View (cartoon, each protein chain N blue to C red):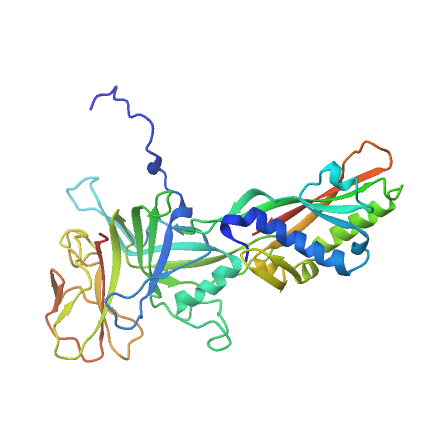
Length: 263
Length: 162
């Protein structure tokens, strides 16, 4: 590469506008299905995911090390917000919370989050200006909806839904898609067949928050539990066979998030 | 329901159909004629009473949703009132102006008044909202100068979301 290199004009698809992004979710507590079917979210005007904030940071020195330090960062949290067309957003809350928001179901959205359990996994599918060609996706696992307010000016207005997550979001490349498989343990089965072939996300031995090279996470949710528990070990993946070292207890949900080739 | 591929024409037909319903049944609207589109001189010179004309809407802005592809359109639309030497003074054109602005600035009336219209199929007793049309407001009138001191012409601009 020479210092006089001419790069020319940008490519048209170097620009990606949010209006061409498809946003979809699966409920973390979904019933067993491989895969769990995505639900498209309508009415989104903007979606913001903020950079990681660390709940604990410390700079560590050692005698003899001089000014060389290690920055210790723990307790990550990613916050963000989704802005909707007002009426549509209030209706879309039902997809996030899993309720039927009609007189036949649950009639109220309370403006606070009753627990800190993950609500949905979200995939923001960023597309080109044909509204179809996939450019990349951002996957936000274990999104937890926060309490929300209400804005009611004279003119058109929006509904803002804040959220946070403690699981690292990831950007995945074109022609891939996130997959959420949920299996039910029976106390004896150790092998589960994933609905797709998981692709490599990174090297678990060098990634702080990746426990398996090809799985964003594996969780087990017991019948009485409100949410799944992360399994940092105890599973292996070969092709489409997910094998547990110990058979999950009967009625336990095994929840697996990974990325597959869209082709 | 108004058709995506025929939105301009369908919106015009629906607004025309609404005024047509009033023209055929309700005073003082029944005192006026109604024209679909901009009227030719040779046509309206033969009218015996003042008339209202309904022009085609113009797309001026969009409302998006992420992933939507297609957009909701914001349109402006001209409704005109024309008294070409039929009454001799501006009293009638002012009554027409009042009725037009009152109708389209009263959302509970303009969106719930029923009318008949034929789009992809024939709709009976439909409404603007039923056809996917929402009128945000009606501004005006603008005074359009005529050739004669006794020719009175006014135009109004509707803002429509469809």
